[in-house]
Length: 275
Length: 256
Image (cartoon, rainbow over all chains, first blue to last red; front, side, top):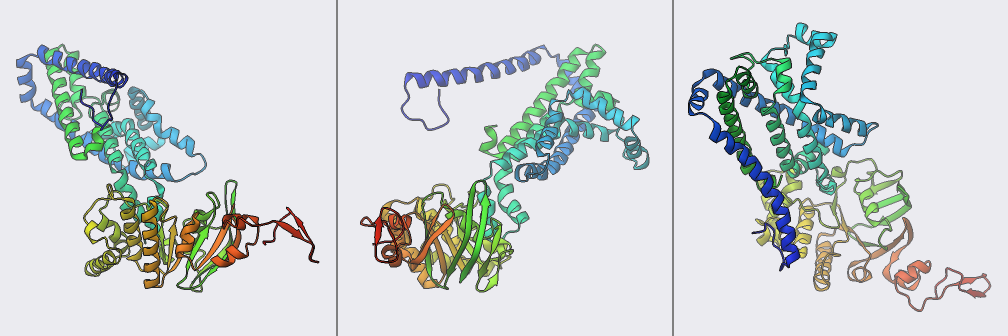
């Protein structure tokens, strides 16, 4: 077994330690690969052809990709200033705010969808947003982005905060003495040094958003050619007995996710590969 | 010149207590003291990274107590240099010039000039990771000197270096200071450094200034036991004088 780090001469205890660590990696990776391979062997060729030629499924794929990308961008737009604030500023109740930021991570996704539906249909503010402002989310593609944002933005915010925590404040202080304003030191020093952590948060957010299912069924439903995304298509196909097609779509989802995550890791550099 | 007037700062249980220091223009001043004496905190107060609780700070006669760090005209070299790891040596040196909106041509000429002054032209394209301690020290000094500050603050600038390099760097620091006529405050706990570079010195202990003066004054007329011990006056005797020529050994205060 080849180790990543330069190590000194290793004794048998060190080798056992490395082997034990690698054992867990192997078990996990083999298990995941087995699941995918099982799907590949089980999937019907006709079903694959159906999936690749269906315009509704192409639409669902496109919806999944663009909504998860838009969600990730919006999440990062919030994550960077929020992560920086939570990392650098102390204010009354900051511990509570920190906990609230993590709350959507532990929310069952279904609950998030239900809560959003209740908010937009039962509260004055929700109805005002939909009826008077004209921002309609229920049963609309915009609702997909909202559901994805609510359930996945916390990952981006948490990652950004951790990344900013890891940037030594002395760098920012030195930047201040060299002529930067606080924003200048943030832009020129803190942000570039936290970049990898922020991108990692983006990957987590995108991954969660891309595969989201539960809250979408509640808030936006799954209307063919309108609000259907890959995850809801899988559910619809299997609920009408098209298990082969459902499985073929699942494989499509897995491959698209694998390609996207691998590309971002390669672009993001070696630090991301550690995450 | 830089002058502090009874500045106080407290954080947790530590307190800088009413520090007053006056350093004339172009002088090399060294601030000595044991670890934890408050030397770094004092420097951070001077450059505005810590807001003092009371007192005033003057640079060239202007009150800069409430001035932002970037507008004080102070060049600060922190203890472990804090070079930006995501930038090359040249980008590190150019950092302050860029932040101040310097024109490209002017920036290039200033970087070249400073690179020659500190003999680091060959390092310009290197990344920070992999530089030796001495190289990092010179790059961090270049990053500050390129901005032509009025005051230079050096926080233990040679403590991470080996003995030989330390002496070389101290000599180089003094030579640069003399050439540029920069008012310099150098913080250290090492007495040898003081004798190599300083015109004047002060000794700080637990946030309280013990004595300020020329090094020979600190050696020959220490104001208290601590200063005497710090200046390694091994034959120092402590005693108490009654004002009529009678002394009582072992009490405190006067040097013999």
